[in-house]
Image 1 (tube, one colour):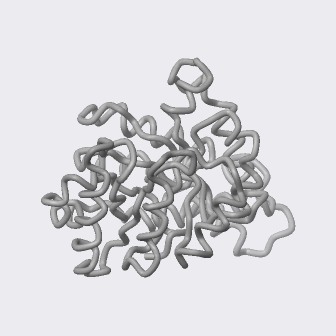
Image 2 (cartoon, rainbow, N blue to C red):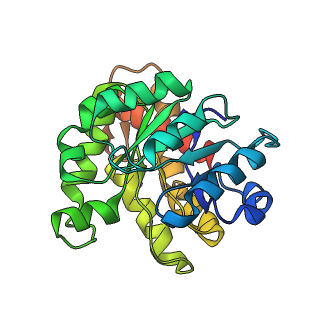
Image 3 (cartoon, one colour):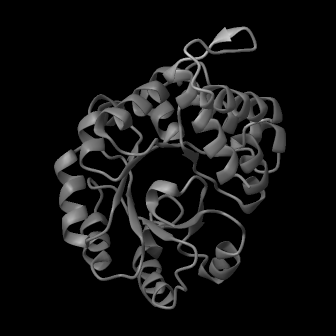
Length: 269
């Protein structure tokens, strides 16, 4: 699966490689092996070596990404150096703020880079970072902490809108939304995913296998939306000059929206 089609990637600490096979079979679109927040400083080198051994036997059926440490950390250089030639499908750069760093990492590793926007500066430079990356993702918890704001939908509306806009202007796929900290509250997870879709996100970062099923439900369009989209496409296919569905005029943007809904429904099957 190409990076552009990944909607629901699942984090796995690189120190818990005993769960790697289970994570690959959990039903997520990809597995992100995490060398950053989930790995203590004393365990960084051991995690790298374990990752090298494990990814060498990756089957390739489920994409595997690696979140390395941030560019301003003492671990970035060693992380970046070991990525060259590693049989993984992409890298995630946390606290992405500098497009030149993103571009250099992609060039040196030969891998697509996802820029994880987690700071005020990263958001300010989001469009330029997006132009240097294959995709963006929102590190909403770190972003909220950086600005000293609540990790709530209303507080994060501006940031989410900016990331979606930056991705669109850069011509890259819609970004991944940040994590939901509730692990087993299926209603909250599904609602967060539905909110992300409404904001224009193309996926969501997951932190536990229990989040996969409700996330898929949240991203899938409802029966009413699918029915409306089918009727719009059918009406547009008639070629009539003036088309109405449910009493509302149908023009090219409405048809485009209907196609997007149907495509999302197909992807969720």
